[in-house]
Amino acid sequence: MGPVLCLISAAAFGAMAVFGKFAYQEGVSTPALLLVRFGLAAALLAALHLARPGRRWRAGPRVLVTALAMGAVGYATQAGLYFAALRIMDAPLLSLILYTFPVLVTVTAVLLGRDRLTPGRVIALLVASCGTLLVLLGTGGVAFEPLGAVLAFGSAVTYTVYILVADTVVQRIPPVPLAALVMAGAFLTFAGYALLTGTVALTFGWRGWFWLLCIAAVSTVLAQVTFFAGLRRTGPSAAAILSTFEPVVTTALAALTLHEVLTPIQLAGALLVLASAAALQLRRRDPLPTAAGRPPRATSQSAAHPTSPHPAPPADRV
Image (cartoon, rainbow, N blue to C red; front, top):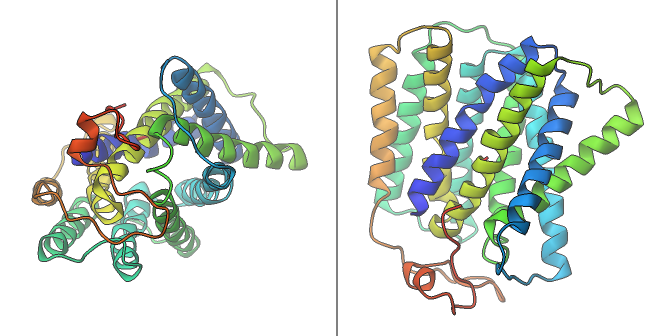
């Protein structure tokens, strides 16, 4: 289920650029979008967790603080850079720069000893990167905006760090409460910004609220929960490679909303991305040496036996 959850997460995240563009058309500002997105998502996740009786878990203060910091610092920074770049540059080019993060995550995870750079994983990464390139370049000429490119690459670097930190936490906190803590942390950051600056206006119409609800429910709650659940099962590099399905969804939805047709180049790129996902459906990797105190990654056996100290949760990304 790990790769499937990562693909669901990528599809949910892929809709965010389109939802964001529609929200901007309704007069929603970037600070208001981020404040409402994370506030609604935190509330929805808290309600979802409370509605799941019997889900017990324990985590020390350090892990809880790390989860909050993931949202307050990591995710808030990544999302702020992403939506700031989205306002001034085309979504395909933004996605092209952002999706350097699978390479960054894979290389860094290998250097840290978290993953092995197997031949199959290298092939999957290369195929996914080529497919992403074809999908995004197939949109035709786009204007290059230097500031937007810097913001987009900053978002990629921040997201790389976020994923690697999340990989150390997902074994200790189930996906739903972890996502709730992350969203609460991000909300606190943007709520503080709103109070300090007094520039966050929520006076847009109901259509703006509708698109914000879509971003919160689909591209935040669903996307984050399934991402954490997938990351817990696959590891950081595989989860990052599978995330290349996101620009395929973004491009397809943009084409549908604009009543366009995907080009043969884009369709070929989409097939390459899906092929890379299929290539990752390999035999379960052997456990890697882990840092002291870090539990082993959930396996199919632990998922089948709830008595395991760290059972894998059922399929619950953004």
